[in-house]
Image (cartoon, rainbow, N blue to C red):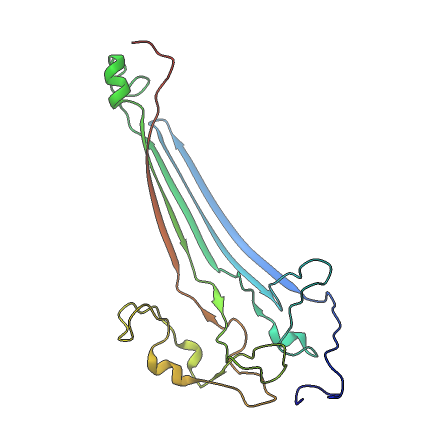
Length: 220
């Protein structure tokens, strides 16, 4: 086999725990509670996580994660699979000022209070940048256990944008013409795209809730 230095032998492996990872982050947080029933908070994290593998082995060496080049683990050093550089979380909770114990309606009849009092609204905003990913060649050109990354033409790393109106139908990240910028590496070489050099689209989520509080023991 082209990939085996001593081709007359079958697979032989050595499993070691020699991966490395680095994580650095800056975090800011603010919270506020106001007497008129308003609570709010927000947090922001800027982080960077780098490693040469992001997967754990399973059990006592029953599963392994292989680098692109077993003789040079640094060949896979890049952003971690879970590296999300920007994360923002924010929330607002507001107790509507109606009903007993609140600004208006302190003397409401219990029936009216059960219907119109004790309401709360809240919302949560979640914003984050995308996860990194590798453009794979689909072929094992360097090490027969591992699929090599693709070769990138000049400027290919700047390509990629979420496109919901692609003529191919569905949602695509790369345009059809962008795919020409990627190719299968030559045998015995690693793809120039490298590991986790592209970033998926950002994530946005907004949740909204309405809650009603009422006492079960009150008699009318």
